[in-house]
Each structure stands twice: as C-alpha cells, then as structure tokens.
Length: 308
Picture 1 (cartoon, rainbow, N blue to C red):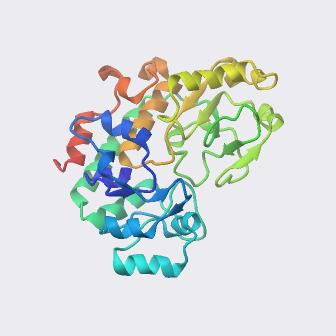
Picture 2: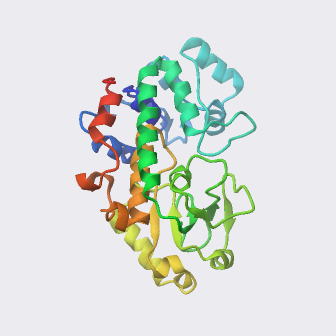
C-alpha cells in the first residue's frame, strides 16, 4: 500500500483495513485516504478470502505476493490463474524478509518495479533523490560510537513466550531503519530470517544497550508502550537488562514500509537514539516539531501528487 501511495495511487481494496497505517498519511499535507471506500479482501469472521470480492473490486493489478496470498487463502495455483485471467495480474513479492527461494528485493528495488507497473518513473526518480538526501544528512550527524540494539519483531513479550529476536544486519527490510543508522546488532552469528525465538538467559547474555521494536511505531500508543516498559522494570529477570534500567526502548516501522513510511521511521529512530543531536522524540510521528523534522513534509506530498 505504501509503495502505491508514494505514487499517489490509492487502493481499491486491502487485505485488512489497517487504520494505524493512515497516521503516516495524516501527518502529510494534501494527502488523504478514506477507508470507507476501500474493500476488505480478508474476512476476519470466516478467516478467509472471498473470491467474489476480487471480482467486485475488479482491480487492474493486485500488489500481492502470490505465495503469501496462497498461504492465507488456501487457494491453489488454479485459483490464482483464474484471478489473473478474469480480473488482473498478481504482481508482488514480500520484502519484509526473504520468503521462500524466489528473488528477494531491497526496498527501492521493489519500489522501482512498482514504478514501472504504474509508469511513474519521474516520481520514482524524485523519491530516490529525496531519500538519498535525507539519509546522507542523518548519517553525517551520527556519532562514531554506535549503540548495540537487540531488535524484536511484533512486540517485546514480557512473559518470554514469544521473544522473537531479529538480526538487524540480516537480509531484511523491516530492520532497515536501524541498519541505516548504523547501530550494532545484538544478535549475530545467524541470519535470524525471519526471527529466532530466544529466552531470558540468552537476552541477558547479550544485554543490549537498547531494545528495538521494529514493528510498532504507530501501532503502540505512548500509554501502552509505557506500560510495557514499566512491566519490564518490575520484572524479576528483565529488570536486570541495561536497556530496561535506562529505559532505552526504540520503536521503528517495518511491516508495511514503503518510501513514505521509510522516512518517518528513519526520523523517529534518529530522534530516539540521539536526542541530543536530533531532538527529543515526542512519541508520535504527527507531533515532531518543525525544527526537528528531518524531511520536508510538503516535498513528500508534492512527489506523491506528481509535482516533480
């Protein structure tokens, strides 16, 4: 969705109507999307996909990884061929982390392919120029001594049943923000693709300076995030962690990252890791003071709306 939105193309249908993702677009001028006009392809009540909805939407193209669609729908190759024959092609590849043996794309390799699908080369070039400028500016201001971050996908499970550790330096796009800011990954030696479940002992052994949550920049509210931190501080074992004692938790975006979310996530991570250099993180992407914003919101809106 974020890739299409970066070219000003709003969805006719989505797997699920994720309102949290809209916070990124609401933080931009002249960019809006109304979920009331978007069909939901996945029926949460029946836990399945209704092929008839695909026919009703009658999309020109489906930006979905066919492997993922097959997994969650239970459809066969024949079902996918029917949709492509009767409605429109299914063109997509999951880039959160490698999925299967097919080619894997970096964020902008995938964005470039989306640009070709929609014939938006000028906008793609503008995005490349902007992100290169933004990251060059951020990286020029980073200290030489980078912190060690223990990254976790989904959430930081206080109960320890689902502590899903991610190697930031592995081939994965959901850890892009932390990787672009040059942090050291606490979990090394294995690819951890997509993740590795670890226990308290292994976490205490590496004892990272920061705990990085790479999937809840907007899904967790400041209150819920604070509750997680307080629970960790009061935990018999987790309270021994340096990151917990210093309240060093950093949130980034990962799951639905495209060009737009990429910039918001990089800005948020920079402010959380280095507040003395980039300013205090206010806790919400929509509350970053103008003087601390690391990219021009109007310029992003202009690219989205084709003013390049």
